[in-house]
Image (cartoon, rainbow, N blue to C red):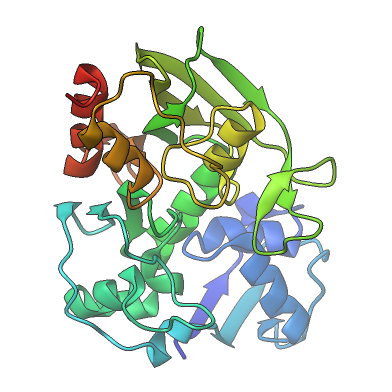
Length: 316
C-alpha cells in the first residue's frame, strides 16, 4: 500500500480552524474525509499527541502524518488493452472509451477492464485511488472519461464532480417521438426488488437530467443530454421513466418500436442493436493546475451513426 509520511507546522494564518479543516488546506492532495479517517485512526499526531478532528489549532503546532491508504489497484493485473487516449498531461488523461469495456473490476470480472488497461499503459496510476478513475460509464456506453494522474488532481476532480462543476453531455437515440426537450428531476436508487437494477424511487438520491431534441424520426428521437448529477444508470432510468427508453437497452428498454414501413435493414438493426445507443460526447471543466476552462468532444461511434442513417432513410 502507498504510505504518506509528512511533517507540517501549522501556520498562524490558520489559527482558529478545526484540525481537519486546517489539514485539508495544507494537504490538498488528500480529501478531507481521508484526513478525518487518519485522525480517527491515530495516524496523525499534534505535538506528539493523538488529537481529535474537532480540536482547534492555535498555529505553530507540529503535525506528523504516517499513514497507509488503500490502493487495491496494486493487486490488479495490467493488461495490454488498446486505449484511445485523446489528451494526456501531468495532471489528467482524457480517454474515449469504446462500448463493451467494463470500467472497474468487480465481483466476477477482475480482468479485462479499463482499470487493467490504465495500469498497463500508465503504471504510476497504481499510486492513485482506482487508478485515477473519478467517474464511470456503463460497460456498453461509449465516450469521454477523465482520469486523474495524481492524488492532488484526483481530490480536485472528485470535488468538482460533487459540486456539479464538470459539464457532461451525451448523445442518445430513444424510442418514441419527443415533442420537445425538457428535464427529468427524479431521485434514482436501487430497485426495491430487482437489486441489480436502478429505479426512480422516493428513497433514492437526487438526480437531474436535461435533454433536448436534435432530430425526430417516425418512431424515434435523437437527443442530447446533460447531467447535473451522476447516479448509476441515470440517463437510462430517467428516459425509461418518461417512456422514451434508450434504443438497445436490454435492462430498461422493453420492446423495440419498429416504424411503419421500415426496411429490413432498419428492422434488423433495431432488433439487434448490440448495446444501449448512448455516447458521452463532451466534457468541460476547469483544469486542476492551470485554472483554465478546457473542453473535449468525441464523435459519435460508427454503430450509432449507422443507426441514424437507417432511421433517416427508414432502412430502405
